[in-house]
Image (tube, rainbow, N blue to C red; front, side, top):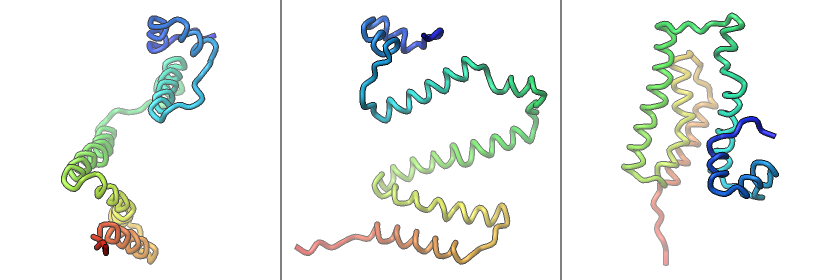
Length: 153
């Protein structure tokens, strides 16, 4: 039996004690759960685990591995959060607003091309034939999927 009850389980008990018994005590579940319920359950279980087992940061500190929160840490964190996280999300939403979700979805396939270009610039990766071949296939697919068709009726 659980020693800890989450807010959602206590709220279920307040709403309907029988439902609480079926779900949390008898462990009777619906045979199918939607994607929202599945993801929500996984997030909830992860947070519950972290809460019950303690923070990993404090475990690392007790082992002598201290994270130094200095200038390199903050520069790396801001670079990782601002550019790929916030800026790309902002521009993606703007792009969807301009051309629509159906057409914008096709351009997701440009990510490997930009990833390869960034790897060549940042990590000095060599340009190989498979980079060129992959880029040609991706660009051809985008062009073909955006091509207007004439309906012969």
